[in-house]
Image (cartoon, rainbow over the protein chains, first blue to last red):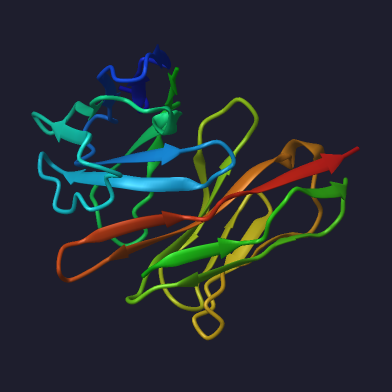
Length: 116
Length: 115
């Protein structure tokens, strides 16, 4: 596609429910990143994929968070048993390759998650 | 660990004023440095970048120089316009031989330019 797309754009859920957020990167980009932006905070780096592999999952806030990527393209971020503190904008980005010098990331519009 | 610190906003300037937004970093390796911008109602986009010490990134009249001795990457523009009103994020990427990779963003600085 022309840019990074994310769905849904907005998600309202009840505490304790599971949610799944989707990211569709720019075609041909092998690296994909997930971030969380809470109100008034900077971007929190959650996880990145090089191809289908996530070498470092230490940025995920808790074991309720998981992410996968299949076919080197679409990625899903799953949050189980959501809590109110999970409310944030979840951003996805992609780049041609992770770790390259000056690897520019292209961001999607984000998914605004609200946990009631 | 790696970190990015940028000046808190909001920064309010009159049109044609000189802009500086300070950014300093800590990193264990040799990171690349970036400024991203988020205009109202839009997504984050790259403004400029520098990949090694003494490099200068520039775009749309904005400049930033990668200063290893002061671990800084301050954003400057000689004459701001109302259309520059946005939130500016300083960031670094640090890829390590162990295979771990971090992309660290600052908390953002909101700039408001008045006509």
